Image 1 (cartoon, rainbow, N blue to C red):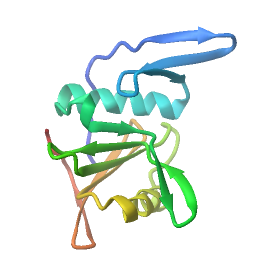
Image 2 (image 1 turned 90 degrees about the horizontal axis):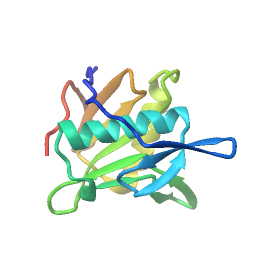
Image 3 (image 1 turned 30 degrees about the vertical axis):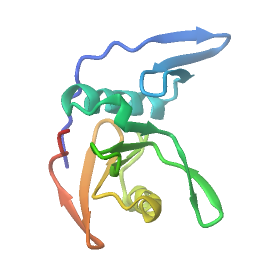
Image 4 (image 1 turned 180 degrees about the horizontal axis):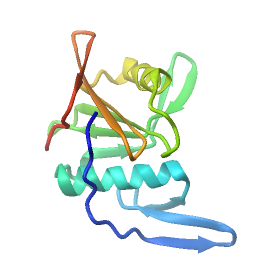
Length: 144
C-alpha cells in the first residue's frame, strides 16, 4: 500500500440550484461534486503538484470500449510520447479496495496496456506494475 501525502489544494466549488459542483482543472469544466469526484480531484492534484505530471498528459473520464460495452476510466496518465503510462481507478472513501476494484482496472487495461495500474479510495492507494502479463504490487508511483 502507498501512503499518499496530498498537497494543499483549495478547490473551486460552487452551488447551482441544489447541486454542488467542483472545477476540474484537467477537463477545464465544472463537474458534479460526488464523493468519488472528490477523491479523483485530489488525486489529480497529487499527480500534478507532487509527481509533476503536466495536466496536458492526463485524461479524465474518457470512454473506452470493452467488446461492445462502453465504459469510462477515471484517469489515464500519458508519458512524454503520449503513450498511456498509468491507469488510475478512483473510488469514494468508503469503498473497500478489494479484488473487484482491481479486476475493474484490469478489464480497462485490456485495451490500454499500461505499465502501471493504480486503485485508490483517497485514503488507501495500491499500485502495480504490469509487465509481460505479470502483476506485481509496488509501493511507489513513478514521477514525471
